[in-house]
Length: 343
Image (cartoon, rainbow, N blue to C red; front, side, top):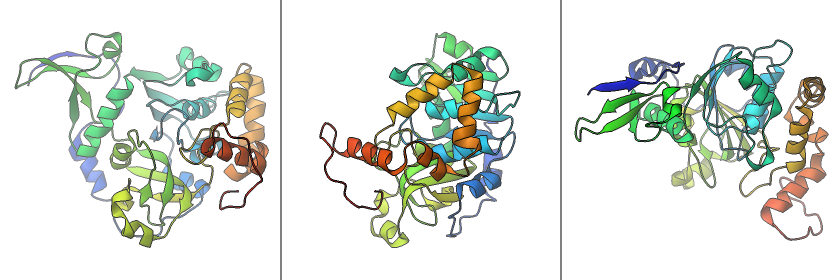
């Protein structure tokens, strides 16, 4: 197979499948109870210098609680996969304030924008500062990198990015197909050190269900060396065994299970609750002034003990009830309050 050219971007993670396999060979597959607090999970599984990946897509089904905890515990020099990361990247970018370097290197695809809501001023300042290393990709290319890792191979062939500046600033290679002689893009496998993923349901062992689109989270869970799962609900293992085809992420991929109702807030959770657009707008507003952003972070993250306290500061039960109604009954006025497991 002939290499025709190479992108000029840095390759942050080793794509050697045998090196990855040597690690996974040591990972326990025992059916053990993995339930713990978010604080304990981050203390145990997220280390300074790690390469981190975040599940979900945009503000959809993001694992907000461990991202807050990473900022709260002041982790340093992390790498990050920016695979359509909007509010999750915004949270981590806020960790690069007052000389603290939470992020050091980023594989970027979509990171600064919050889609129709606008651009994150803090994320933009960080990217324009030159203080972090970057390598450019498309969202599809990053998904292919995770797919290659999940398959245990060193790269995945693709046909995107060819002839673009994105390719020039990536760490991909152009190769000649051994079957057709045509040009293909070789994107290197990506094995993150740790991933944080939010799911609808999980049992105590880490068998997880995601309702709706999974984006690249099936592959991410199989590619990451350590996986922290936050879940809306804990369910019995008997329910998992009764409908095994509904399991999206199997227990042997997961290292920690954290019960975090409303764990994607202020993002949305399909079928559960809508995004808090007012709060997302507030984030964008305070980011215009680094001093105001610091005060906002102190109030909402550094001076709160956990994610539940953060939710209380953002409107608590009443606001969460409104968002649940908005997701489940769009366009319908709210009726009398009903009791339920999340009300």
